[in-house]
Length: 500
Image (tube, rainbow, N blue to C red):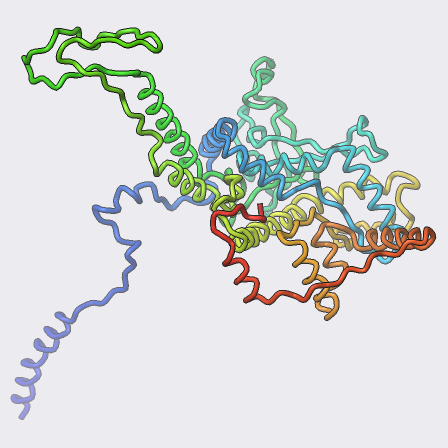
């Protein structure tokens, strides 16, 4: 019995091992992770570099130079960057304090507005937004300037990212990376700023060249850029993905013009249908003949007069430019009609839908500016304002009230509705059923509800004294969504959108 048991075991074990060996091994796969002959060259530049190694100083320098060149020489690129800055900043942000002291709020808001006009805050913010689009980042240094036309001598100085770098006269110390000095907690504590721009002639004329620099504390520096990857320290141009597309757009346009000019340069050609060594008067190849206007002439025997046909631009030229511009604008969350400045292919509904996405991204940009730039500027301004006797009320001259959590908000320019009548009806409906407030409705227009109501009260009081009464306007019934869609469907596709 023991022999039979051992025999059966020895016979079954190889069978079991064999069955286990031939069992197929199942592994999950992603098509995008496969490398083959078809996609090998496409993914050749993919790497696993860290965010800061991928955008090293040399890489950022190349991207900045190319982006600036394209914006300076490409009309579409310049218009897109200008439109983005104008739509984001507008005429500038307006401060509204939300403390319990109404009088203090008004005095602070008025003083800050006067100072903002003195230092041209709105223009500097627009420049910062343009710099982020074409240079990747912008630096703003707050310092005292006795020449500032304001009781508060705080001034703002813009610095290009080329100047924020580790000086060349010495090796970087631990914690110094690409012009930024980090503390023990990984937070910037100081910045190295060259006194001369690397591309400025003064830098080469100076005896010390590129060695002169200043150490600016982080409290006095505002670094404005977009963080695309965790741990990223510096920024790259917003239009980086579109740089090859801008180049293709310009090359194709120049090629079309060159082809049309080449065809136009040849007024006519003389050709013959005779075979080789056929009977035709001899002519010198590539010879040029000047023709006078309105002249009838006789051609040599056996020769005919023909004209080159200008086949440029092709029928797909406009469609190609449209698709390229659409792809360029996508990395900036900008609709095609805004990037191209042309809404001829839009109807009412399409323009309105595209603008909703665009202005939502603008609100995100404005929120980023508030936290990264404006709140820090306000804090520096308050620190200076408390030192001036009589400028701020006594309640705002306490240390606790100057903390960053001091209640306030920022107003930006409102966005005009594409159909003011429909928006007014919707606004009246929201106010009547208490789903909104006057503060919110005025904020959408970029206005302070308290100031607007005070002004309206003055107008009504004056109208009563003059014996005038405001005209009563009947509010139309709100249009249903289906009815609005039907109205939009009736509009022809080629009409210029009112959203423009």
